Length: 404
Image (cartoon, rainbow, N blue to C red):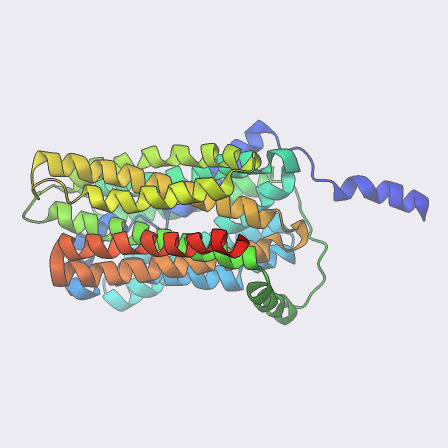
């Protein structure tokens, strides 16, 4: 028995993750996560082509996020049950099929169903992130997760300008066609290069889901971190769902290329991920989270300083996009570092619950943002966006009150 224990011990220790594998995981996360955001700057042309009303245009983004949320709860936990490399390949393949369907359909209902499946297929990214955390040693876990998340955030933020540029020179159908091809290639690369990881859990699927319910009810760190990020991500989704409509409207009159250049500003926020990862490894997550929430709230206030439609107003809108993306990204990494420290054996389930909660906030933000913009323009929309990180700050204050 002692000989068997000696042989088994090395298998329980996570191997050190190499630089090239970190880069591969970051790239894969970025390419997969981009699928969730290609449609955001294309709400106008897609809704016009499919016959959706302005009030219903937000559903184009909302359905993708609803699918993503469902996948986080129903698919991502399987990372604690099945061999991860094969699971990742299967989920990405589902996304590739959905992207191809979105490129071909010509009616609103089939497109919205395809958008739902794009969200389901995109949850592969949240199987890859715990995979990276498993490979990283404890002392560097925040740094590795931050580096991988920087790739994910770059994918999110580059998706919008890439989609706008492609649409400007061809059509939005081409965006989804290219995305489908990229996903097929990614399946081939990951299947050949990722190491095998077989989880130790031997649960039935029903038991796996039931265990998630218990975790959600009995894990205070998960509850707090998920609600923080739900508020911030709701503000993020509201901002990026409605600013293309604002920029294309009568105040700014930007073309799709102009909206794409604006969206590039958000890429600067991706630098927050590796910075936040290093902060988290030093035990500064609580302070960093408070600063992230203040940054997100301040971003919306910036947009009220200048006369709407002026050059200064556009510059301040760019600054707001950078600050908002920075705050949301940093708080995301702080949250993941905290929940990944709770144990390797249920990392996928914890991550699924965390991501599902705050993506539900994102779905609400994008849907409510479309309604608010239709009812009261940017004035109403921006105050709703401001209220969300303020709500997170109020809850954050209770963290200190509870200690006292």
